[in-house]
Image 1 (tube, helix red, strand yellow):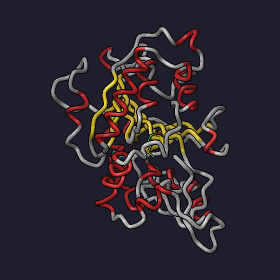
Image 2 (cartoon, rainbow, N blue to C red):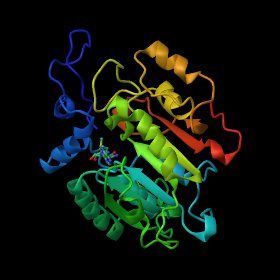
Image 3 (cartoon, rainbow, N blue to C red):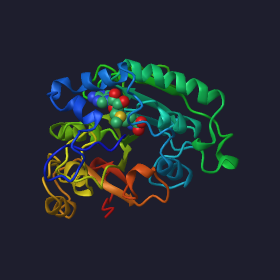
Length: 303
Ligand SMILES: C[S@@+](CC[C@H](N)C(=O)[O-])C[C@H]1O[C@@H](n2cnc3c(N)ncnc32)[C@H](O)[C@@H]1O
């Protein structure tokens, strides 16, 4: 995502708002999805395009960590772990995950975005780029999972059944995802939508599933407008662990929120990792956070 800035006398930012900020500056909550579709339909889907999957996620997947379900043998009932990437855009992460053996679903509210992702996926599955792997010698030949792209609104439920149809354990019901990966999706949403984002994440995960967030943008002045809306560790913690609304006005509040007690929210943090590799756009500040539902019934501190 381009680093859009809001104009403002005290922001120290350029006086012209970025193109994404301009698209959304006068859109109310119910018009947000239309804003994303308008950008895609007018050929501006490249404004936030990083051109490759998240290096931090590639490394996490190939690390063999116990923090996330592994394709080889984890899936309950012997199936491959099922992953959702909401706000998937062109689908870089969806394809990369499938190339590593996950059954991956990309969800995007824009039909044009979904069509773009399908074209991208077809090309990659035929001839994957090297950027999909950190260690191609070990992973390039592994058994692939399925790729599916679904057009739908993350906050609605009407796409849930469609995203599971055709899978090994398809019994017509929706069983939840084993992993959900968020990169530049939370920051794409109006701050007033954050609490619903957290609630929806808890509904969409299977009881033992994990939410993986590549936290971005952690460097952006909290007073600036989005998308991308500025985020902090404390905002994620407030939303997921403390059960707050994730709207924190300044750095002091964000710092304090990151230290607040673990109660009120649906999640505990399982891990908090400074990735060795990530996109340059993060200015070296991206963090990977991994969250599990409290119903997992195990100790989750992750500080
Ligand atoms: C900033 S882009 C990020 C795309 C992708 N994660 C990437 O890194 O390239 C945000 C994406 O979320 C999609 N989006 C926004 N609101 C959505 C919603 N309510 N449900 C599903 N997708 C949404 C947009 O169409 C857009 O493709």
